[in-house]
Image (spheres, helix red, strand yellow):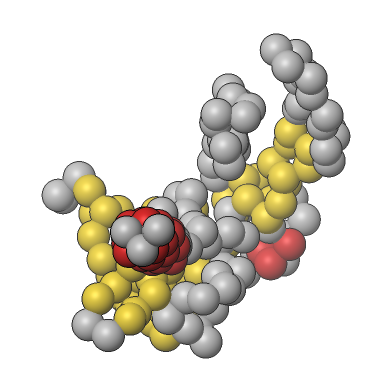
Length: 187
């Protein structure tokens, strides 16, 4: 009977160690969601203003801008956790941006996926061509069953900041996407 006790204790220690390792690896793989409600709009003369919704747990944000010369996105700025607004350098051309959040722990950084891309052009008040201000969608929500399809239509409306009621949107392209393509695909 004395011989069984050591083996039971040894087995118990192995199981406890295994559970600890599992919970530690799960805690280590916690990730940040991509920033949402990212907006780019004209502000001041020849500048763009980027805004986004705060990501819970983020230590800061990195702003990437598309550079046509190198044909890729390049990090333009890094801002702190309390900054949810950034203004571009002066420009007169169309600019495309995307943002990602990061969490800093010691000397290591964990990054979120990138936000969707936003594009805008700077313009003066009363301009004839302006950025999109909002998208008017035919349905605000859609419920689907497995393998079911539904159509949703959308219209791009000009920005109210233009000051010109007859202004036209310079780019009416709508990007459709799904936050979880394994659940629902959008085209």
